[in-house]
Length: 260
Image 1 (cartoon, helix red, strand yellow):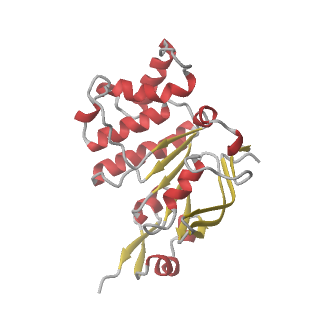
Image 2 (cartoon, rainbow, N blue to C red; image 1 turned 90 degrees about the horizontal axis):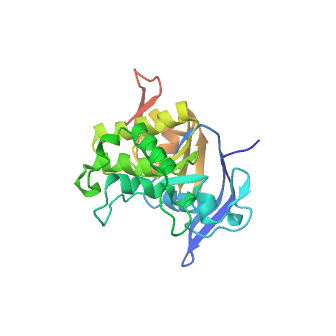
């Protein structure tokens, strides 16, 4: 079976500090997978390994059955796209210019974008409802609008794997749901595989097909939200007690922290 992402015995250390230890998992096709865990648990480092931001060892990470160490960055960018934590843009580019940056893996040096690249950019913006913003300055947009534009840039890469590192951490609840609805729809209607780091456990439960709970660089539990988000796991990892109820709309678990 070809998995979009397979990770086998991934380890990472920084200054003799162990960040990830023996991480092994598989990401299924057309799934929405959420990585959850406390601050400093290794979630973002895990994503950086998948994106080859951190240099991996051979046979630890495979993207669509290809060893990531054998893929150059242009080849990898055609397979996997990412939305980083920080979506701040330092220069006053137009929205169209930002989205067209997603076409860079397909454009040779000193070449300009072709009509096909503009059409793909338009389609990406239509998928995120940002086409009407195409001529706006990226720095004039709201946080939610800018986040959707950065997702459009990732979609313009025409990769079927989308990685998002805390994509809703700086957004209000309206824009959080808006971004998650867009990414969830990519899985259900566009055959995307989405991997996202989320801190809001209830939103992770609501949107994910699969959860990976990481703590202190180890995978503590993985599987369906019902399997992973248990009172025992949350107590052990987050050091808090919770009450669990059933969401009356989704039928999924919903957690309520118990305060003293």
